[in-house]
Amino acid sequence: MRTKRSLFQRIAPTLLLVLSMVLTQNCTVDVPPEDPDPPTFSFRIIGDGFDHTFTQDTNFNNITLMLRMGVTYEFTFFGYDGGGMNYMGWIAVHLGNMEVDPNLHGEWNFNDNGGATTLEWHGTPSSPAAGSYIGGTFTTQGDVVTDGAFQFNAHDYGGQSGRSNTISENLGVVFGAHNTRIRED
Image (tube, rainbow, N blue to C red):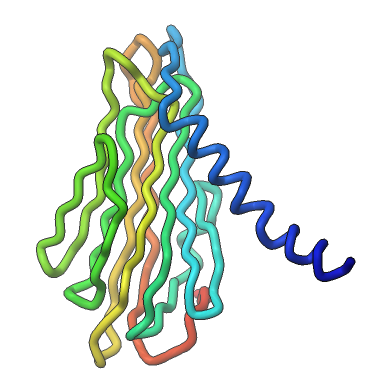
């Protein structure tokens, strides 16, 4: 019995996230006259014994993500705004120490210039969606300890006034021969 409960406790958050993604991906919303609430996002990484979700509430100023070289990680990037999501973006500055393989769909765009990778989604003002998501994998590579950064951006429509609420967070990343973990600075 304990094993079944433990398994359920581990997979329940993932199932809830998947259900949320399915419901918001194709859910059009009405842009309200005013939208004072900023959008929300989550970025989940799984791999190398590590499973963590970063959100807009994470204290990014005091942590660094330590990624091990030669490991493939799964990621899921999810954004939501009840008044309509206008833009979502993940920019990974990695100086060639990471290869991203996204599961592209819908309005998602992917660009990799060898030193940085960008995944972006633009909403459609004529048919605003509550949010979007994207998943995939990234593989770290190289043999020299290198600093990088993940930037997460989310913008809503800001209501009919057009004053967009914006979330922009930067996560320091270190690629190296160490265990995958969050280092508190």
